[in-house]
Length: 476
Image 1 (spheres, one colour):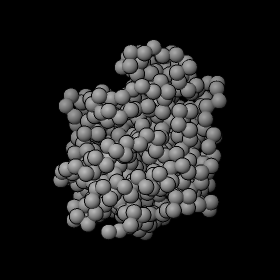
Image 2 (cartoon, rainbow, N blue to C red):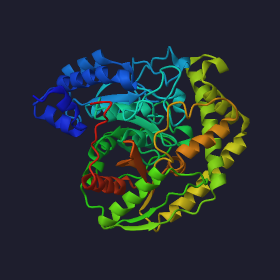
Image 3 (cartoon, rainbow, N blue to C red):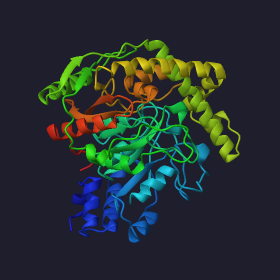
């Protein structure tokens, strides 16, 4: 049998294959993951809740014949619920909340054979592109512990980069899978809106901005996880177009000659760091060598109304999130229960009338059609994932004042990711580039609505052309 560190170097499908062939047991994989978490988590603070005994019991029991049977996995401490396991969402307000039932996503993950070891760090209620909650303290970047892991799936990004688990759950309402994927040097796919269900508590999340999936080291793991979790749940208000074939079958399928547009200018005119510009130009050249048609071009969008509409919907959504938790727990809320940024943004959200909210949705839909028309002539839109390399911890922490001004500062760090949430299109961050300081710099690739297949084919091609399985020096 391989030693524990050799096991944790494998991706999820390779680990599952060893279990299937009876070369290792699920308990071997679980113990290897636990050992790595216990050794490395003090350095990165990625895992904030451990459910080791439940995991050991599951590993020792019947595994079923799921495609990922026996593979250890981590849930983000946000939205998804596991019966009998506390959910905090990075908030002291939820200190006593223990779900009674599994979310539909968790049921599907368990049917696939995954064994859940615990929960990963996230900012309070998932708000923000850095993972620095008061409740748990900051997650630290495994490439440089003084820097952010990104957010809001920052704990998941650090855990996957450190090989604690081969893949970890994330969700994304403005870049929360792709931002930590870029900061931590792993692969992060945001699926099409409603590709993965949010039930039973929610039909849609944050006005359709949010979607569930994962951060992984390999493309094929992301595809396999999407196969295991995608598809509508009973009573969902809408769902994504069905795929032509399993997503796993797209990995290795030739993408054909794609029409790839790239741009490094932000919609709102903020500066982009030279390292992020260089990463896009490098990726564009790589695509040309792979036979794709590459042009410098971007959608024509009326940017300010688009951004204002997105921010209006997002702030109203956080007002809803607080009220939803108040109703579900039966507890009144007060400012002292939440961090200042969460309370301030929710307060701005309460200032909007219902008509203003619907007008903002209308403006987002109008801009989404502008973006969709762009994809009539292009298969892929390539941009930097972020406007800068991973910033120092504390840089993006709210210090008071206008929360919308803080949102604008956040947009300067992640000026490209929110667009795919507003339009509902699939997008991925691919770790093709590291800067001179040894920090990962992701590139974002967006495809037309419902077309994860093209992204997965292209990502697999890029993975072969430019392998990215690097190991952070902080997590040997």
